[in-house]
Length: 100
Image (cartoon, rainbow, N blue to C red):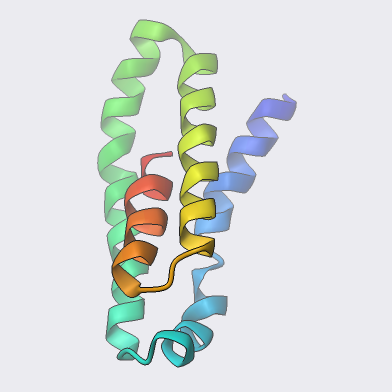
């Protein structure tokens, strides 16, 4: 049960993106649409990866898939927190966090 709560917190963490929109625009000096694109892409990737993670779960079990997801999410947050450019932020937030 505790593992399920942790997984839901990870997924819910994706939806806090709107809190960071303006600070990211200010920090990177980019357009708002570039920052908004990150959220759009991560939601798309989450939906796409869900198909494959469900199939993987049938093969190796939910505990292993959840562990892999938490590892990807954690590494993605670390990469995104250390990003000094928008592409690196995209890599951490969209690619790695999107694979949970």
